[in-house]
Image (tube, rainbow, N blue to C red; front, top):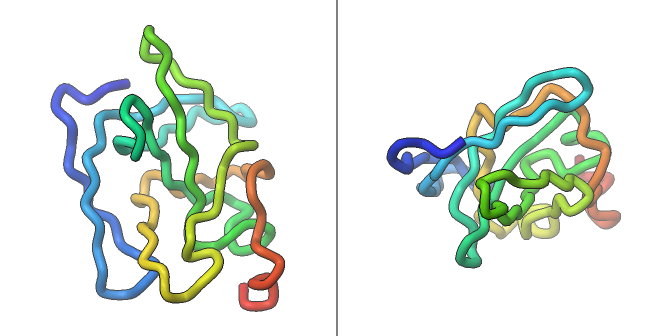
Length: 127
C-alpha cells in the first residue's frame, strides 16, 4: 500500500553509531502462517524495485541475526510477490567492517521465515 507521500525512515546500522536514511514509498501487507503482517518497503537500488529489510524468528539461529534483504518488483497493478526464497544476506553477514542498515522495528517479524540465505558457514560459531 503506497503512502500518500513517501516517508523518510531512519534506521540503525550493523556498526554502532551509524544511521541510514531511506525513502519508504509504502508498506507491503501479506498473510503468513495465519498472521496478517506488514513490512515497510524502501526504494530499491534498481529503478522500479523495492527493497525490504527484515528479521524474523530464525534470525540469530539459522539465519543472520542483524538482517536479511528482499528485492521485489511491483506489478502494474501495484501488487508484489514476496518470494522469501530470494532473501539474501547483506555484506555485514560476512564481515564486521560492513555498515549494513538494520531493519526498522516494524520489520522485525515474529514468524519464522525459513527460506532464503542462511548464516554464512564461516560465521556460524560467532552467532
